[in-house]
Length: 243
Image (cartoon, one colour):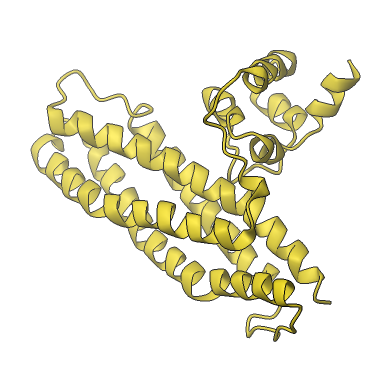
């Protein structure tokens, strides 16, 4: 019972940081592990009226399952993790946004009269597209380069200048707030799309668009998780080594 109690007090984001396979379990229960990963199992179960013992049992099954697909992101050097986030997740967002905007505009024209929720979905995704573009640029031009400078300074045992933004926690807090905004937007999109279930009269474009939106949200969850739960804490810890 001691293990059960210990795990009940463990933060959700830490579960996923230790083994990303647990994200599938949290997703099934509608538990936000990226933007709200600082909550404990006990906290979220009490709030959502979930059986904590059952959730922990499912997490244990997932953790004990054998797979070769688990990636230990926590073990990666910070500069490698930064490059991975930028090249995989930032590029993914940039590639998918134009396609989704085109499809959503088409759905509004063709199906909007029968399904007025499409207009709100389109509006929310357009806001997300605009904000994500600005968000990623700030990371690529300000935060990520500084993280790489810290890694290089540590390896070379050289000094590092204090950046214009002061402590690294300052841009990190801004990024986390913007992550929260995106998480809320996609909670609304998921609700409006009936969790990405197209209606009975949905054409192929309708079905593809909902599937793409769901994939986009899943990629965003991993993207935010890698930053909130792994990159950001490690960057703040690394900065402390420079006094």
